[in-house]
Length: 191
Figure 1 (cartoon, rainbow, N blue to C red):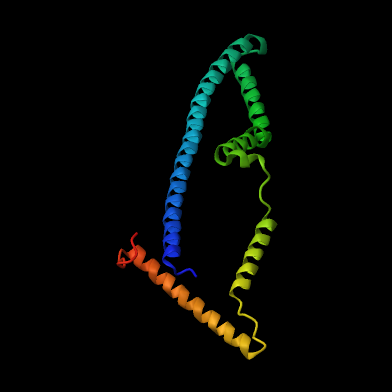
Figure 2: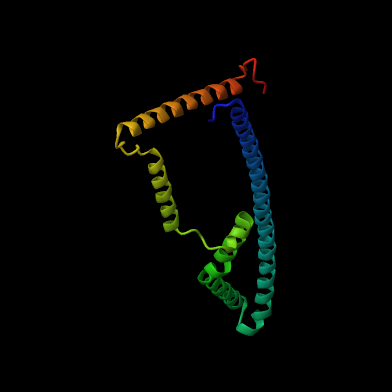
C-alpha cells in the first residue's frame, strides 16, 4: 500500500519537486510579466513623445496654412477659421473611426504582448467552462458518494475490512509524511 518507506520517500520527493516546480513557474511568470509590462510602458512613453512632436508639427503647419490662406480668403480671421474647421473635421473623423483606428489595434497589440500565440485563437466559450465545471462536480460526486449497500454478509465484511485497511494505511502514510517533513526522523529511515 502507500505507507511503505519507499512510497513515503517517493511521495515526499514528489511534494518537494512539486514545490520547486511551482516556485520556478512562478518566478518565470513574474519575469515574463515584467518583460511584458516593460514593453507596454515603453510603447506608452514612445507614443506620448510622438504625440507631443506631432502636436508641435500640427501647430506649425496650421500657422503656415493660416499665413498661406490669408491673402486668398480675405483676412487672417477667415484663414484661421478655415484651418480650425479643418481640424474639427479631422477630429470628427477620428472620433467616428476610433474603434477601427485606435481600439482594435491597441487591443490586438496588447493581446499579442500578454497572450502571445493564444491571441490568435478564439476566446474560450463560457458554455465550455460551465460544462467543464459540471464534469468536475460530477467526478467529485462519484468519488465522494457512499458505496452501494452490500447484498450479503460476505460483501459487508469485505467492505468493512477494506475501509478499515484504507483508513489505517492513510493514517500510517500521514504519520510518516509528518515525521519526514517535521524533521523528526526515525532511526531506520534516512532522508
